[in-house]
Image 1 (spheres, rainbow, N blue to C red):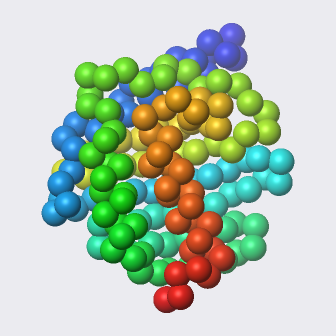
Image 2: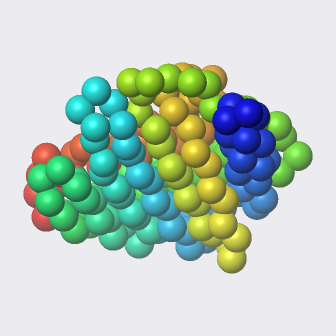
Length: 150
């Protein structure tokens, strides 16, 4: 019964995960990503907007980093946003069980619309969201490691 409820909740969340209108380089957007789980029990958050303002948080260390992301990374993110599925494309309906995986909660806000996705390492493997989540995870790690020099 527990898995049936989880299935229906996940299916409902994922059914609303497509971005309706791909952004252009001039559209405003905001992204947030929360990464939790793994063997170490990680809990990290990132938020970034088309202006390049990035805020990264690591709950374990208490670190909060605010940086300006380089233009090349913003162009890359915008390009990845344009590649997200349209509403009529199917996204995975279930999140594969995985005890030691990272779980990702992605929120995409643009054009007055908001899309939420909850997935994990296993379910993400063949997802059209994988490149975007990979890029955001990379930016999160770089920000917390102080690699942006801001």
